[in-house]
View (tube, rainbow, N blue to C red):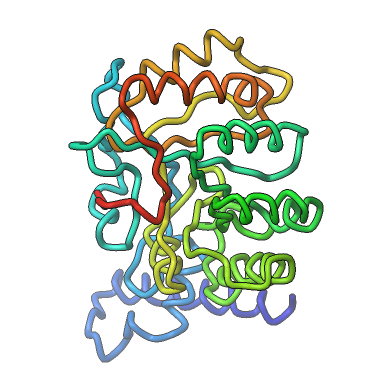
Length: 286
């Protein structure tokens, strides 16, 4: 702690020194070099850039047009989607949809969701935390045995853009990988869902460097509060209204409502000609 405080104080003195040089007209680069490691550390501490990439934290969102037309993004991530191997929607020319479930803890509804998926031979992706793997190994095994993807949602569900140290960032991912391999005996699929949808350019870069595809979504709704669940009909109508070609659905398996409507929902999608595809079949990155 003392060493860290000393570094911060030294950087503060460097900043004061650089400002005084400007005030008195000394701007020669040979006098002060802004590319020196200590000043790069200063930028990192104060949330500017690391290795030329922004560390500013954003939250994922999509633009809702109010109908079933494909969603679009108009936010800070737009130029980063192809650059850092991200997806939020599939091929909008085909009636394919992708079901993804976030799992931080078990609330008794994953099994009935799996039952509905099995009935329709539909494959989904479950983004889990280390706590979930450790406390629900049999459900993890069932997911894999029934052809679903069990994917990385970090070990402890932090805001990943706030972790600027690459070693610590990677540990959130590798700790979960190890827990998964202990249960399943093979490597975890390389799909990553950032907790709370929070990201920065740097976090997307780190994720890509680990060989992962970041998977955002084109549909989500307020389903994650167990004590504030929408009615079954409300949820059913909302999801169907917003269904669109290439949709990547973010749903939460702690939702009693989602569990109760899943069979009915998939049946209706099938009637409308939609096919539920695995993320392994995701054909288009946008």
